Amino acid sequence: MTAPASAIGNIHCICMQGTDARRFAQAQFAADVGELALERWQWNAWLTAQGRVRALMHLVDPGSGTLLAVLRGGNAETTRTTLANYILRMQVTLAVRTFTGRYGGPAPMGTARADSGDVVLGYGARSLRLEAVPDVPPDHAAQEGWRLEDIRQGWPNLPADEPEFLPPALGLEHLGAVSFDKGCYPGQEIAARLHHRGGHKHRLCLLHGPPGPLPTGEIHGPDGTISTRVLDVATGPGRVEALAVIPVSITRQINLLGNIYIVQHEFGA
Image (cartoon, one colour):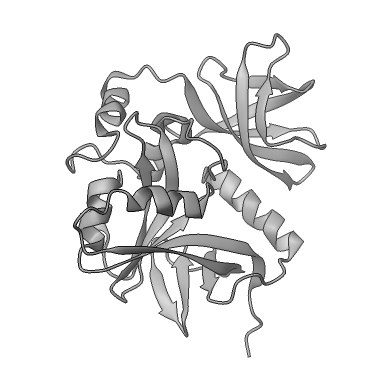
């Protein structure tokens, strides 16, 4: 009998049910929901009217007639409450569900399958099992390994505060979380303008630095003017690896709290 995959903590989702669930998601979210096939998942995002990212997700069609938005950070209940304001006359209901996430073995990228009441998302060399029972104590080594994989792939989690990032700052094109030809959605005009004309001031990068603590959140440079937002941090072999939103003016290295971090990789625009 196969041992259960290691728990990595609670995963917060929004469950969308009803005959208009897909139409509602297509009208609100930035990626093309029409391209989401049965038993697949896609990157998607919900933007403010000003084009800032207020929810980032894996949008899943597990084949049960329900869409599941697996949130990448943020606040699930706040997102659900605000999103519900736009239902109007559509036949759709929104509910927050909390799962235990488990770190599983390889599964084809983009797949989503139901398994004994759970949902398993394929991430290529790994998989995420959404176990219907929440609040299972996490395995801290598994949590660290999971974060490290996310960081290396350029998969960000949003902070749980007010929307602050424009799509290029989180690499939404790299993720495939924004469409420019599917039609109107909140923030579409701003996203398209940044895509076609540029002008964005921040980008998502992988940083490598010396072993030692590096906090998440906003960090100012030595002169107090350059600001970096560290989204996630994990320990790799002999170094710290971090996913951060940094100014486009920084190309090779950055000073954070007196330590030099190398800009190892940029995750698209």
